[in-house]
Length: 321
Image 1 (cartoon, rainbow, N blue to C red):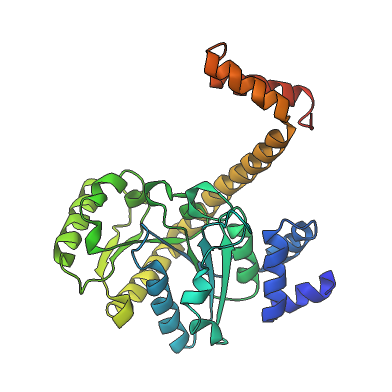
Image 2 (cartoon, rainbow, N blue to C red):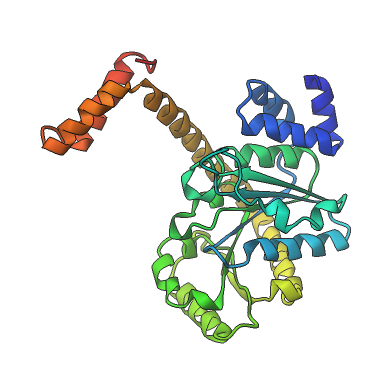
């Protein structure tokens, strides 16, 4: 498929072309950059929703219920499900595509699993670019589900317009451990599995936590919802809240402000990704062994060694060894 055919296929929302475009982006193919530039004029129309939370909270089930309900209303939805990376194949482990197989049969829903590839923050390094492909393809709703890694899972806020944090009654005291990070990025909270014991207590704990913290948007008070995704209970209320937050962002230029801040963080992340990859590849095995001995003996601190490596790498113009 040549570049012009691929571009036209994506803009016409042809599933094969969309899948091909995301594949180019994910493997950092040289053709991905020009493609994303050509698509840029069609990016920005979709509302991007991040779904995050601790492992086992039922994020995939909730996302499936939300996407399914939107599809029943005649909407089209793109889904990116980021999974842990296999240490053997470097692909996504137990992709959410398996758990949302029924939805993937719908012409209105496009689902793609992506491997996190060891990226901190719960996302794939190319998740934002893949979302741009889906956005340009004309999906008005984009859902991005991040890896369930707890309180460090904050990167998702930089690539979406609305962030949902999913918790469960069993989270219990864990809310105290995660509130310093994950609990502060939510635009709405969902306590899933509300048919389980302890749901009311968990909802009360979340309300207490939210009342004591400062949301990044001072004009928005995050909603708190109970739901049972498997039974599709509470889904309508969550969708209504998503619409309310979308309307909130559309007023007074808030959406553009958020997206500009997100792009700044995205660019910084891409630079770090490339620098780390090139710097890591420039360190020879012999150098590493020698550095380990120096650090273990106390001859130099790990920080000093790392600074020396960086200085040498920069002196070579950022090239290899």
